[in-house]
Length: 277
Image (tube, rainbow, N blue to C red):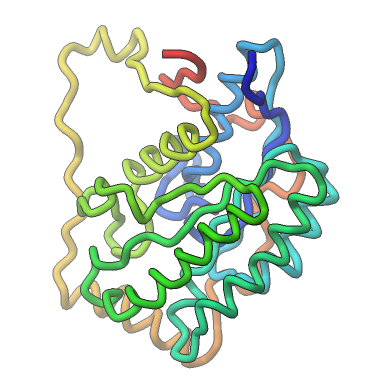
C-alpha cells in the first residue's frame, strides 16, 4: 500500500472529541464519538495491511487550547503515536476577550511539538457557527481562527479536517438537543470526513442483520426542544458555569488514557468497512 497505514492513534480535544451525545450502545452514561469511530475505521484499514490499531482518547469536556498544549500533548507524546488528531478552540473563542490570532499561535506551539515527534497531525478547524442563533456573534472570530488553522497546517505539514466547509453540518439532524454537540449522525459523518482527509477510503455498509430486517427505517429526526426548555436546561446553566469559571470537565480525566487495541476496547464500528471502495 503506497499510503500510510496508522497503527497508534491518539485523539486530543474537548467534549466534541470525547464524544458527548453519541451514546455507546449497551453502555449507560458512556459515549463513542467521531474519534472513537475513526479509530474503528482506521483499524479496518490497517487490517488490509496485516496490522491493527491502538487508540487512546485524551479529550475531556470543557478543555481549552492551553489544556491541550500544556497537558494533553505531553501525554500524547509519551504514548508515541503515529497519528494525533487535534480538535480544540470552541470553548476559547466563546470567551468575551478571545483573541483568535493569539489562540492559534498558542496552538501552533503544540502542533509543532507533535510534528517534531514524527506523528501525522490531523488538525480540525472550527464549525461554522451560523447554524445556531446564539453562536452567530462568534462567527467572525471563528473565521479568523480557521484562517490561522490553514496557515498552521501549511507551515507544520499537518492534515486539515475542514469541518467549516461541510455543508451537511447545517442540517439540524447533525446536532444533539443541546444544539452545541453533535448527534450520533453528526459524529458518524465527522468520522467519515476525517478518514477521507487522511486519504483512507471508507464506506458504511449494511450488515446481514440489516438485510434480513427489510427496508431501512427513515433516519430518526433530531430532538426538538422548545426554546423555553432549551434555555432552562442548557443555556442558563452553561452561562452560570461560565460566570463562575466552572467546567463540566472539572475533576475529570480522559476516558481512554492508555492506548488499547480497537477490537479489544469495543470500538469497532458495526457495518463499517475501511479500505478501497
